[in-house]
Image 1 (cartoon, rainbow, N blue to C red):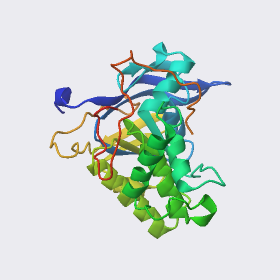
Image 2: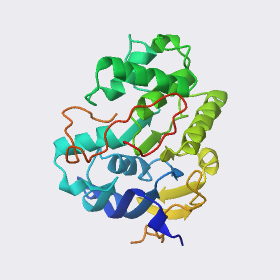
Image 3: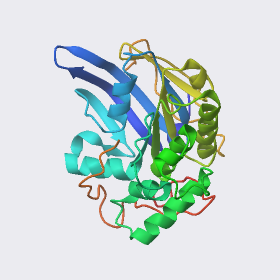
Length: 284
């Protein structure tokens, strides 16, 4: 379908199955490939397995069977400590409930996303200020969560997720707690971040939201039932990788205790950012 040799793979799932006690199979042989710069929706009704897929892709849970690779790392080969480091360095999360720290301002909430980066506090705050400006909240840096609207809280959460320039941004029902206008503004922001180079997966039950995205991966009963679109990576005109699909899927992140996943000097560190800086791979 696509010449994938020119596209870096951010996520690769092969034959992923997840079973829980009692023989409950939440995922059943899922194959999924996400290329750098893609914007896709993972869409399905309640109980379809999309939340479990989020947990697997976000390395919050391990599969019962199959292979999971994130940013070139085989998750099965990593200890819990190194998996925490991978999650901290390579994945950003945005949740429906925001998960902001009450009692502190937006700047400190965003800087918290860099807590285990090893950067000095002044640098973390400077990067947080840049991220807030990027999402249109330069004038709300000292506002605490209770002083922000729902849409503004979600923008702070997005700024926190992208401040370290992760390889992948996972947005779980990012508009679920918002009114229509605020939800549209958040989706517009995600499109803008993608245009700057961010790889974004939006997990949603809302087919209207999914329909606005260039690629939709539909999941039901733990299986990928459709994979349509496969838009171009921003600024390249090269289609991103799409896994083969058949009816059966065809063959808040924990940042504590993080340690380097890659050898010193070779791994993806946290790059400095400036206002307007593209969300790219360099230094990440």
